[in-house]
Image 1: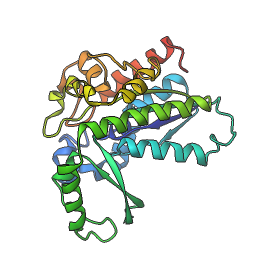
Image 2 (image 1 turned 90 degrees about the horizontal axis):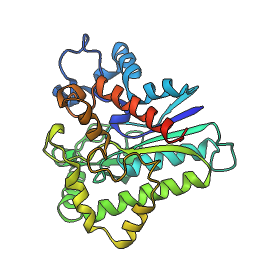
Image 3 (image 1 turned 180 degrees about the horizontal axis):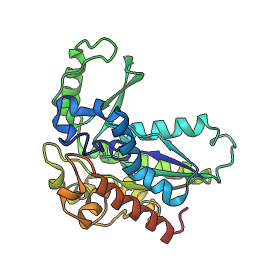
Image 4 (image 1 turned 90 degrees about the vertical axis):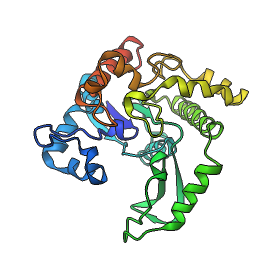
Length: 284
């Protein structure tokens, strides 16, 4: 079986570093300390403990394809997943029986924009709550791009709202499911978390997002209701509707999380639950 993992930093394993090598949480270091995750000892630790690899061991996957990356939006998750499926031939006739896809949706308010200039390896620039706190520097030459600061400020002040991003998120979930089912691709998906700007991880409350569902159109409500109840884990569960809340149901925030991401224990809890859930619901 080929296991494909799609998601953001929670799937990728951000902040998972060897506690002996890194006794201080790396998110407290300048730049979030992400460069320290490339150290061989920390890379080995992340590969061992993140939920994607633990889940792969449980289902005896022969190969793990990691499509996740920190700061991704659901826009990015969908784009990267279907680019990969297309390039691998799965959308043009290749047998999909050996494929299983795990999608960890990120918080809906994130998105990406296609810029006419290169931004790192491509033209896509991520947008999230953090975009309001930082100046934007071009990765190519590290020059400040004030136009991007102005654009994101304008977008946030005048166009960023629940009606827009909840509509986009529901459409993405529904469309992704329809395409995967049409090609007989097995999958499981979950909502990793709902992010609340300027609040620490132990203060995030799913119900604050769920209450906003009243703002979506009747069409969006119908699409959401049609999403597979089994393949979207705990879709309408008000208590454990996200991986974040499920982890908190199994332990304290101090045990389950580091700063903004699951700890090794949190990843283990989620990997075990994903496996049990998939087995109980015959999803594999």
